[in-house]
Length: 74
Image 1 (cartoon, rainbow, N blue to C red):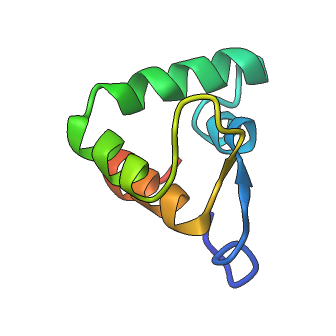
Image 2: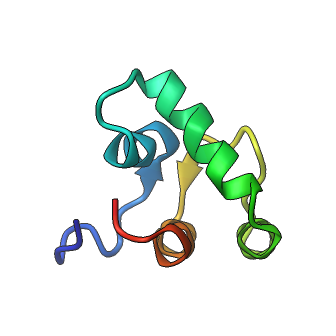
């Protein structure tokens, strides 16, 4: 997933979710990824400290990295 172009990319929530759940709709993938994230208070805390909140449609590269570091590569 990582290459030089993706390191500084702003990620759409649905775009990242589809990498984790490629065989379902974007809406379902987004909801499932959010469920996975909410299981971890540490991950939610990291994301919130970096400015994320539920309903936000885009992720900064740092926020995306927090998710991938916690959940593993999609």
